[in-house]
Image (cartoon, rainbow over all chains, first blue to last red):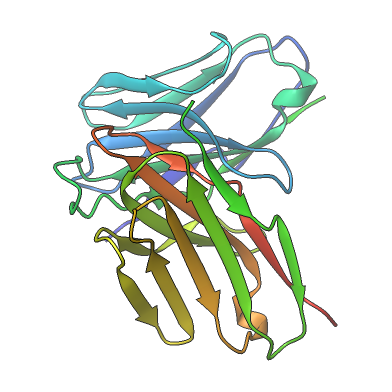
Length: 117
Length: 111
C-alpha cells in the first residue's frame, strides 16, 4: 500500500512569492491534514479537509489556504511568503472519524521543506 | 482554548535508563494517540488509548490513560539508541473531531 506522498520535497522561494505544496493521501482515506513544523519545534495544525470541505483551521493568517480535490488529494497555498514561513510542512491522511474507537490514525507524508529567503 | 500540555520538553538520559513523558489536558478526552518522530523523519503512529485507566504495552514502551481521561503517559524502560526522537501525544476532546497535539518531548541519549 502506497503511503502519503508530498511534493515537492524541497521548495525555495523569496519573500513575497507564493508557494504551492501538494499531498496525495493513502487510498481510501478521505481526511487530509496540514501541519507546519518549524525547525526543532512541535506540530502546528494548519488545516483539515474531509470529503472536499474544510473542517477546521488552525491559528494561521488567511494567506495560508488550501483545498481538497475530488480524488481527496490536497493542495496548500501560502501567499505573500514571509521569512518565518520557513518550515517543514507535513501532510497527513486518515480514515473518516466515525467514533472514539475509530482507527483514525494519522499517517504522515515525508513533508515539504519550504525555505523562504 | 483546548490545550494538551506535554512535559518535559527535553529529556537527556544515559542509554539503559528509563524515560517518561506526560500529557495533561484541561478537559476530558475521548481518546489519546501517541506518535514518534525520529530525527529528520515524520511522525509515526504508536498507539491509541480510549478507555479510562487503560494501560497498553509495546515491548519496552508502556502507555497509560488516566482514570479521568485527562492525562496520559508514555514510559520507556531501559532506553536504547533506537528510541531517540520526539514523542508526541495527540488528544481528542469529547464531541470534537479535532486532534489537539502536545508540543512533544525530545528523548536524547547522552554520549
